[in-house]
Image (cartoon, rainbow, N blue to C red; front, side, top):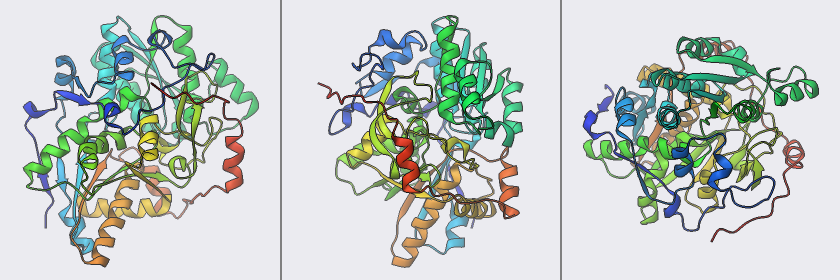
Length: 457
């Protein structure tokens, strides 16, 4: 039986982003200035962020209008399809109905463009013509290179070294859109040079790459920094995913899902599909919102909920989040976008409030589910997305075992067309599963900053 696609007309692209902050049962802890340990003020962020993005970052408004120029740019590929995975259901023999939101249809091949477009737009509005950023697997770097090209801006990307070496075609994609790409750690920044002295041959990490990109932006007044996940405004931009999915489920004649799943590294694609369902969750609907992370970087499931730096060189504000420690360097798994020591403060806060769940899954099992998905649905998923697929398959098999109907929704955050070296290693039996000993994680947490907890008014 063929898969079924549910499409919204372009005119039904969401007109507003959803901000989850006012709907939490208790307010989230504010980011702190690393020097004063006081809540960050807009002026503290102005040296590296656009004003419009700072306003969104600190906003407590539930709905924020999407500018017309941003909506026009998003309409190049949005609304994205919601697809019922009938062939996957048939292969599993499950009574569950499985739907996925296909974010792989964007120009850069992932959900990341949902935020790169507005971030480039608001910077261009402020007269900024040069942007810096980091990227793990290359999805965010590709997205920002595309958005910068769209708005006539320059883009410099610090790409985590292990991914830079594993995924050369991602680097070429960025270069095709005019982006300049450097393997991180590099010798271009003080932060990069310090890491190279201490850890020659390191595979790098998102924390290190963030330090390099922030340093470049801070030292050059003609450029700003952009972040592909973690911060409130990035999660805000991604809510177009869940807002569209809710309308598409109605179009399909469906009810509220039993479970909503997405992979989780920094947290933006998970928040994008899950946060718009908070209203149902808070109203008492028995919906589960599940973040799926790798056992190699188990931030939500084994990290500590406390204040920490978002980067390795301690240049960023202190964020209250689940963290493995800003000095943590995860192994070089192929889901490079999930190799981050922290998780978005709002996602972490949602877990602390009991609004979401988190699970960790191993890399080999995820690739097995990815191949199953490719063989049934025809799409080769990104290694990151395979985590959500694996969790969806497990939910569907549980429904089969329990002989009960279930409605499963997951976010297919991107395709794996530039990740085929990962698949080759899987087919050749060369992949490994990683699970960190408790002592190793404890050592990484010893360097947490001694930030006092500030209770917001």
